[in-house]
Length: 622
Ligand code: BES
Ligand code: ZN
Image (cartoon, rainbow, N blue to C red; front, side):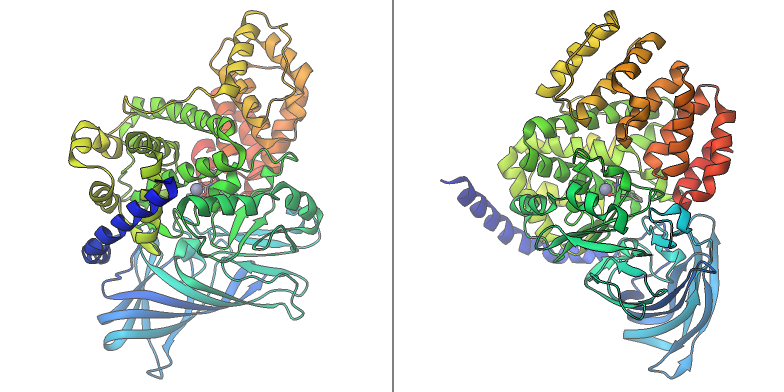
């Protein structure tokens, strides 16, 4: 039988068996509780949202109204999440009356509960209007001055709502288990463009007013808005790039293979369900590599390396269009369902587009990261190494570690090895179809896994429970020895013995260099050796942000004397706000007796960082 035929056959068997289970799944979804939200969706659950907002770049606030339609069951109160919002008025158009409201519980991490009192018990759809404005300190929002942008002439605003920051710019039910559709009207200063995680304009509007629609139901953490001096360039029939005019051409070239990635992703796990896939390149203070806002991934400009060598990040954010945006973690305790699946899917896209030699390098780098993170956590906080983590009472941001990403990824690799790729691919395709536009817990996934992929015998002979609920890295964690890293291993071995050893590296990609630097970190390289490498490869002046950050964390603890280097580190830390680079560099400085230097840089750089980077670094540097 042809492979695709057997896949279809297995798939249709799954389909029939799945339909029988559907009802019990739907039920358990209603019974979930989210430790990071005040909402009570069993009584009143958000179904649609209409925003009408104006951006004031003088006061750094958004103001206007949010109209929420909720599905109610005998509800006399509606509970929403807010953080630092000023609520001016709440009213009901259908009842033609103002509604009483008050702030309820308050918490440093999860913000403030907003209680809206209904004048009678309500069942069915009910719509409330909320007039409000944000604080200039709203945690999701970063208001940039013209100097912080590429063009230096216009200000810029972007949001980062994941994990629980949507509540700082919209009064909303801000849990990943609650999905709604939205419409928005956004007014901005003339000459600026507004974009959202929705249908988007390609050109400037004449009056500064933009309208948006997101027809598919999404959770609040995927609400996104950006305003700035932004232009558009198409890169394919359903893909394109938005960026400041100065970097638009280079961005469009860098991400020119996005359409190909979507085609490969669809071949693997089914149709792309969001119509368009565009990328927005933000100013360098964006705190993440990428954020999978539906239809419009937000990106750091530090992935523009000039050689397309960092586009695995595009594959990653694109993969979230299935794992995360289509099938969503029900609570932040289930975050690995978003990220672990996404790293696996990312790797499969990279293999399909760039070949196995390439994706094996990414896999090995992920393993290396995972291995050191697990070792470190096991010393003082082994519970952090669980995939099914408990973040009740903690900031969901604490769960953003290599465990969710790389341990999750390696767990899925193990499952693939266990049942074979063909069967695993059918399983995943069906998983995305079965749970589409729903949010699921780790327990629900385990139940689905046991009824659709792993039989009792396999379950009993494999340590799957240990993988999901245990600590550390199980002994059957799969590993690879990438062909392209063999040469790097040899080079490092020779270089450590003799630091004048010349080697051929012309054909190395970013990933060979990252592996090379990673090996040096684990070796006895001397200051002389580092100087020799600097002389040959000029890492201190390299444009590639990944290689620069890796080099910096290699040389800082090794007391490497180089005036240029200190200036470059300082310049990098002041320009770039991507937390993945900032944290290890600042940490390396602190651990190497350079805390005063680190603090001096931080005192100048802090106001240019987004709140999520500030929060992490405040802990480290104050
Ligand atoms: N969704 C995440 C970013 C995120 C996670 C923001 C949790 C807030 C809370 C995004 O998809 C991501 O994983 N970004 C990574 C990229 C990556 C390739 C691992 C990043 O920013 O580095
Ligand atoms: Zn991700």
